[in-house]
Structure formats: structure tokens, C-alpha cells
Image (tube, rainbow, N blue to C red):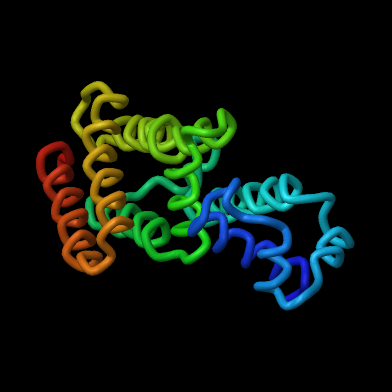
Amino acid sequence: MSTKDRILNEALTLFAENGYDGTGVEQIAEKVGIKAPSIYKHFKGKEDILNAIIDNAEARYEESFGSSDNIGKLPGSKEEFIRATMKKITFTMLDPMIKKIRKFLVQEQFRSERLAEITTKHQLDGLLGMYTKIIEGLMKEGLLKKDDPALLAAELTAPVVLRIAKADRQPQYEKEITDSIEKHIRHFCDVYMKE
């Protein structure tokens, strides 16, 4: 791993543990094993580090989870929908970078308008937009009953977001939470899918 990547990784860990204001460049450098002035060879300062972390996390999320602009291939069956949805959820719950980002955002969303917007995007608006488009597509394909796609997206995603937040707070229940999420998704499919 390059020094630049190590700086980003250690900074994210410290931001998630101590908050943005509670983390200094000196602490980041110490964790990386370099002197503080060496950080400035790679970044202009702490805000530049934060921006790089956010950009990396957004790119990783877009690639592995998707967005309303990138819904991927529509599932062709109930089981395919469940597998695809659980794959996204597993990524969200278990990816070390995404877990740290989520913990950081939950803490910092009240201190930064930009971080509040990112949190809302990933925990509400962006997620709803993506699943509204997926549900609309499944309705057009005849796999889901006709209904209000935005309401169905909320019905599907809201309990999942709440359960993921519980897993973040109480990781010892991760397995049970994952099982309850899959049970919820299966119930949603049993109620609304035609197959």
C-alpha cells in the first residue's frame, strides 16, 4: 500500500473513532509511521485528506452498490432480486471502508452540511431513488404488482437502513440482523412480486 493510501486509511480510522475535529495531522502521521510534514507531500492538509477519503468512498460505493444513475441489470426473478439486494446489503454492512465512513458520517452529519448531504444521500434519498427505479423497472417487466414505486422503495429500504444502523452499534448481532434483513426482503417479495 502506498504512503498516500496508508494516510487515507489511517485518517479514516481516526476520523471514525475521534471525529474530524478530534483528529490532528500529527496523529495521522504517527499512525502511518511518518513525520507530520511528510503528509504535506501528498495532501494540502486535513481537509484535503477528508475530500480524498470521501471521493474514494463515493467511487467505491458507486462501483459496488450502485446509484439511481447506475442501477445495473434488472433482476429477472424473485430469487435474483433477493440475491442482488442481499449482495448490496452485505457490501454495505461488511466492507471495512464503508463501515468506517458510515460511522464517521453518522457522527459528523450534524457538524458539516456537506457530510449531512452525503449521509442523506446514502441512507435515504439516493437509496430511495435507486430502488424506485429498480422497482419501476420490475413493474414494467411484469415481475412486481403495479403500485407506487417510491412508496414500495421506502417500504423495502427503511427497515434495512434501521437494521444496518443497529449492526453498526451492536456488531455482535450482525448475523441475526443480516438474517432479519433477508427475511424482510423475502416478505416484501412474497407480498409484491407476481412470481
